[in-house]
Image 1 (cartoon, rainbow, N blue to C red):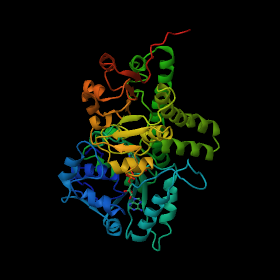
Image 2 (image 1 turned 120 degrees about the horizontal axis):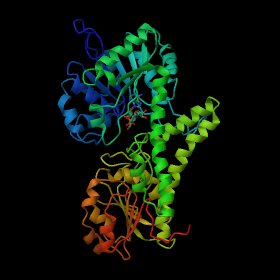
Image 3 (image 1 turned 180 degrees about the vertical axis):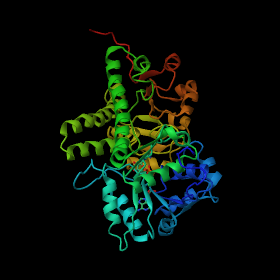
Image 4 (image 1 turned 60 degrees about the vertical axis):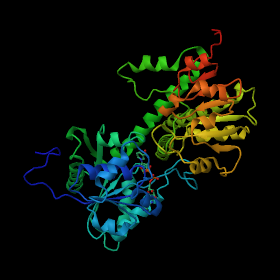
Length: 473
Ligand SMILES: NC(=O)c1ccc[n+]([C@@H]2O[C@H](COP(=O)([O-])OP(=O)(O)OC[C@H]3O[C@@H](n4cnc5c(N)ncnc54)[C@H](O)[C@@H]3O)[C@@H](O)[C@H]2O)c1
């Protein structure tokens, strides 16, 4: 018997795979499948020709440690990137759908429900171009029961085929995507509990079985799998909001949030991971998936559950606002005309992704206060930062700098917004000398050595730590 329990003497024919959507998930996930399954042809297609050209070049559209090597291993051998969606649909036995599912910005469910128009467009493409039954895999994060909607669109085909729709949500985290794909905590596959559905689940499980141990492949019904992804992100976001809420209480009471996190994290029921206080969570998923969950709860007549999860988002908004306001208050309520050096713009280290990064809200709030920002991020392009802040490239209020030293030159304060390791290696003695006095550091990630910075002469504000005031209890 093999990993997936099938009979090795009579293995199923290797399927060919197509992934529609060559983004942060589609690209890396397919690169891993192609590397681990050299006998499977993997096509990744997208309507965005620029993105596909980048996947075919040395400047990949996604920055992830180890991704370049992973793609190079298989590209042109059994991994192909193209814009020819119809041909790739026809060729595939298994079709992954990995398009974006952003929050709806209009109409019914505005600012909460998932916008499924890209999923629907793909379903219509499959209905039009598929010439035989396929296994269609929801890789995108979608509301529970989306498979039903996909199935109904597939039925609109002139010649409907008996496709199987599976749910196989992706749990990779940006910044560690290659590692997560290589060694996943689990692979979740949901399908119909009919013989055909179970066979489709097994066929997909066999692909992952090339490198994922069988006990890490979880098989469920469709709706459990769809919902589990939303719930996983909601729990992760909730943990960040929980520790961030405590960071404010630590500042007020003299407790240290790192010490509190360590103390509670040693309890095996709580665990140590994801307990790092920060300026807030970001990324394309947490906010949209929690919003989607709150919308679903309301839709299914559960307003109390919806309100419960809504608080996770509110706490995150408050944490970002609170950080920006702390900066303003530290300068006697005016940062008008003051240069502030912003270190880090990506929503976390080791990615160039700025979607929903806390830096956007914090910078916008400081710009409203008429601060002058000099921003440096090791991986985010200047054009992206200007676009995210809604500012022209020549706007004097926002300068993007090629290195930290240039950003810091002449600044009143340094704001650490992303935990890039390289920021620890900054020459802070030289930075202090290059700054306006008093020189401030607001460490929104608790990344730096605060005692050392204070000994240089900096005023240091660190998240979740007492400001040294006498306590009145
Ligand atoms: N980014 C993450 O860390 C992450 C992790 C797990 C799950 N997810 C989920 O995976 C899905 C994809 O996320 P992403 O970050 O890769 O998004 P992305 O925006 O980076 O990529 C989506 C791609 O789909 C393409 N696309 C849209 N409509 C298309 C169509 N009709 N035909 C062909 N291509 C089309 C877009 O051009 C884009 O390149 C989302 O549902 C997201 O919630 C993301």
